Length: 154
Image (cartoon, rainbow, N blue to C red; front, side):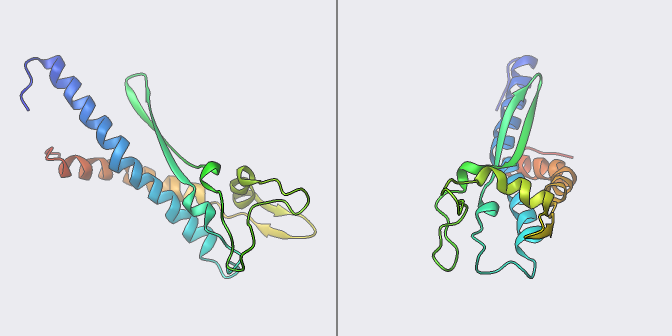
């Protein structure tokens, strides 16, 4: 593409970056969070037939313009945790008492653990694990995504 002015060139670069970040870079960050959940939560000995995978598939991203840049938020979206059943056909993530769903608490319970005398377990801090992976790979993902679109990078 040929740009007539410097400002149109800058605008074109910004649009290309926004497209790449909203697309493949955000998807890779989302996949990183799902991988962290798999490795830190589901790949342990006590995970079994009662696991639904809802926490893993709840990985989500949101890209926002902030000042002169882009902000990628990577998070577990409780709205994506609907309609899950374990291997025994039991509806998961509902209260035994009143049937209310508690999707929004699953991340906190998983990360923080539980110190109850009835059921005690250590937290699985998958968030810091995903954060480190995303932080260490963000520039690489951006570079690879731009190269895939024909943009030469260093």
